[in-house]
Image (cartoon, rainbow, N blue to C red; front, side):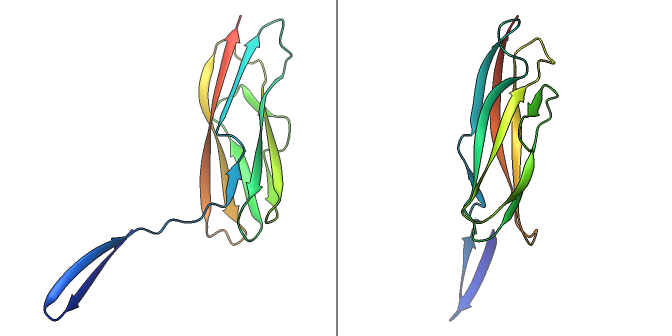
Length: 130
């Protein structure tokens, strides 16, 4: 956000300009949801797969992080994606918790120069049936 102040012929005016960066990636979903039934569902159990598409003009690197210990990844939790290409992140429940939970997983994308870093939150909702 920038404020521009201009003076002309004794008159002063201001304008506020907001510059928004174009996204580096798009994600196939922003929500993952699953039901896990102990002694019935597989363990670990896939919660879902997110396709990460690089929509920028150059390569990007990405990483996935979550504060929840019961979530793991059956694919890489990061990598480099060429312009126009895709990568997949598969999230799974490792059965380390016996109760339902909602948490946020974050995909962080960064351009090759490191000058643009963007975070993309993904809501994860797991219902655990004992």
